[in-house]
Length: 400
Ligand SMILES: Cc1ncc(COP(=O)(O)O)c(C=O)c1O
Image (cartoon, rainbow, N blue to C red; front, side, top):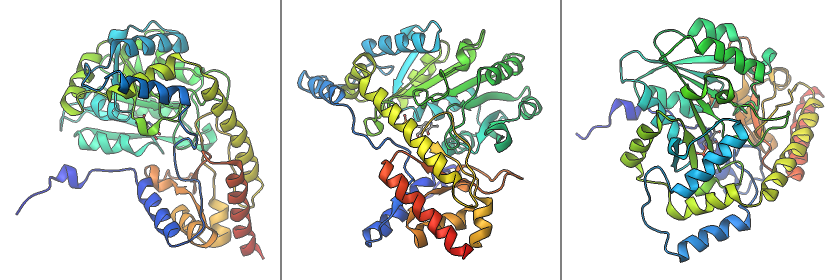
């Protein structure tokens, strides 16, 4: 009998994709659904970037590249990181891959040993691949619970309690998926104070939403003194330039870069050659289109937060970044008689024609925090207005 390994059978996933399939099945049957599910910009990739890729293909840039990526791109990324994070970044410390996502696995596997009791701290609720990969690579997942009263940051004392000599990696994600929360300079400094006491502890700073930052200027923990050395900065082009399907992300850390490169050699060999030229244009070319997208997201954020707060039973904090809101729907669940956020999500989908994700798609529910759902506002203002109207009507019907 052929065998499937336990670690594969138990491999976690982005359950959001299951919801997406559920939504698509309903749409195929003719149901009209307003979707707030997808975590990708609803814009097209800017033309200058597309043409750079077409140009690269016609110039024969179609073979393998060095696993770390073409030097011109790594130089451009190093310059961009130096300017935006205010730290010196050398191109040799930059590695390019097929999206930011592969670096989650590449980093965990590079800094923890399988089954040795190495611990990894990560945000909960959070991007589900963190936990999936911590477990798949034989490390121990230690969640840091994000709290509504902290603006969906974690309690710094919780970090103090949980970090120890076995902790190998702390995963940070600001702006955050799914809550949209951002870490302030003060919080980053408090975190730095704690982790600097542990020599054998890395920080994975997932900064894929760094350009979607609405509350002043984006801050990276790598820019705090002595932190760059232990921080793996990870960013990508998916969210900033509407390039999710192009698959291009990058990581930067001097010591880890050769090891991450070796993991790229062992897995995908290199990022797609023409895509690397598209990325070069994205980073070095005009930023006007990208800036306009960011402005649009900010307008939509204000619209959706205001709209949600006007709906009976829903309260929503204003997120500082990304394109997600994470409203508290505990009272709304009570009004419609839904047992929890997942039942509420299903009812919204099947009965109101609105697709959202529930908190259980982003880790275990946090005790005492009530029920939450995630809405992505990477969709048109018309859709946002229509979706909010449907949610409000659905809840109001129960009040009558
Ligand atoms: C927090 C976070 N990290 C990483 C990724 C993956 O990004 P990429 O498309 O660059 O692989 C996502 C995508 O949704 C994300 O939300």
